[in-house]
Image: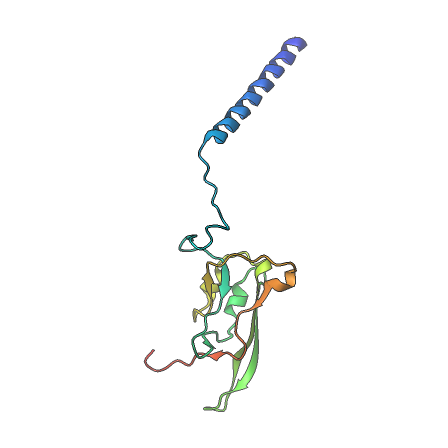
Length: 159
């Protein structure tokens, strides 16, 4: 009886081995679909909703749409975004208001979940298809999205 079970296990093991070899041979004979990544960098087409890197667009006058409300920072599940604001005095009304000082984004801890852009009421941050983030140190993965000297975009009454 033990001998019969032993022979059955050997035959079953050989069957599973041949089954795995059959699948490997099928994959070896199929046409290759590997993309030639570094060579096709300029012609690479991304999906419409592809998320590569978070950016803050600025216009020609170095103005952005971020009001430093912090909703994107609150919407981020793992603290990837830090909005540092400062108080400035409005020249027209003389009242103090909040203005963006630094908008820091840590690519290394980002999960690319899109909750920050969904929470932003001003559409101040958008995703770009740039996905090459290779650096030698983690500290270089922290980016400041607002440009130096940038200010809040002034909305006209026609908008």
